Amino acid sequence: MQTSTERILTTHTGSLPRPAWLTPEASGADVARAVAEIVDRQRTAGIDVVNDGEVGKPSYATYVLDRLSGFGDVSDTPFLGKGRADLADFPTYRDRLSRDTAGTIGTQPVCVDDVRYVGRAALDAELDRLGRATKGAGAAEIFCTAASPGVIARFMPNRYYADESAYLQALSDAMKEEYDAIATAGFVLQLDCPDLTAGWDARTGDLAAHRRMVAERLEALDAATRDVPPDRLRMHLCWGNYEGPHHHDLPLAEIIDLVLGARPTGISFEGANPRHEHEWTVFEDRHLPDGTLIIPGVLDSTTNYIEHPELVAQRICRYTDVVGRERVIAGTDCGFATFAGMATVDPDIVWAKLAAMRDGAVLASRRLWG
Image (cartoon, rainbow, N blue to C red; front, top):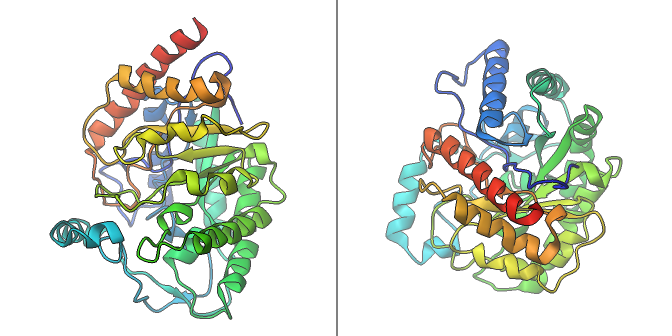
C-alpha cells in the first residue's frame, strides 16, 4: 500500500455518484463507460488512490446477492430509520429519514441455504473494467471494495446455519474467492466493516458482548484474507452513513485495539463529522503496529457543505502530529452514494468536496515537508 512519503496522498471510501445516464438496466459496455468516467473525474479532482466508484453495484453490501447463493425471503430485521437507538430518541426525525430513503435501500433477504460463491463472471467483469479504466490514469494506487463477512451477516441475517459462528465461517469461505481475485488482479482490497461499529447495541450497553462480536468477525475476516498480504489490505469503519443524532455511537476507543490487531494495515474511519471529529485523540497515546497507516475522514459524507481547504489541512495535521506524516492518507467519512439512487450530497458538490480535500492536502504537505 502506498504511503505519504513526499506529500499527503488522498483517497475516499468507495462509492461515488453514479453518472445520471447510468440506469439499473445498463449494459456491460455502459458500466465500463461509467467506470472510465468516474476514474477520470477522480483524477481531475486530485484523488491519488482511486477505484471504480462502485458504479456497477446496487450497494456496497447487497451486491453480493448476485454473487452468493443461499439467500431468499425477506427479513423482519429493520433497515435504516428504525431500530437505531439514536433515532428512537427522535421519532419525528426518524420517520422523516425513513421517508427520504424509502425505495432506495430495498428489501433485506435472509440466508436460507448453503452459501457458495457463484458470481465469478460478474467479479471478473468488474476487475477487468477497473483495470482498463485505470491503465495510464496516473493514479498512485488502485483499490477495490468488497463486503466483509461481518457486514454481509448484518445485512442478510442467518436463518439457516446452526449459529452465527457457522454462518460467518460459511461467508468467510465463500468470499475468500472474491478477496483473492481482487488481490491477484493487483488492486488493494478494501473490506467494508461498518458492522464493527454500527452494530453496537446502545440499548443494552453490553460492551463485553460487543467486543466478543467484533473479535469473532475480525477472526472471520482474517481467515478469509489469509492469502492476501496485509499491506494490500485496508478496512473501513463507520457508524452508519446517515445524517442523524449519532449520540449513542460506540466510541472508537472501545474497539480500536481489536481493529489494529487485525490483518489489514490500512484503517479507514470517520474523522470529520461532528460526532467523531474529536476522536483523533484516540491515537495520542496508542502505538500503531509496524506498517499500519490510517485513513481518517477529512470530509463529511452526509453534508452539502464544502469543507474549506484550511480545515482539511488542520484535520490532516492533527493526525500526522500524533502518528507521523508518512502514516496518514486523507480520506472521506464514508461513501457518497452508498446505495444507487440515494444521494444525500448533491453529485456536483461531491466533486467540489473532493477537490477541496486535494487543496487541503496540498496545504498540509507544504507544512509537513516544506
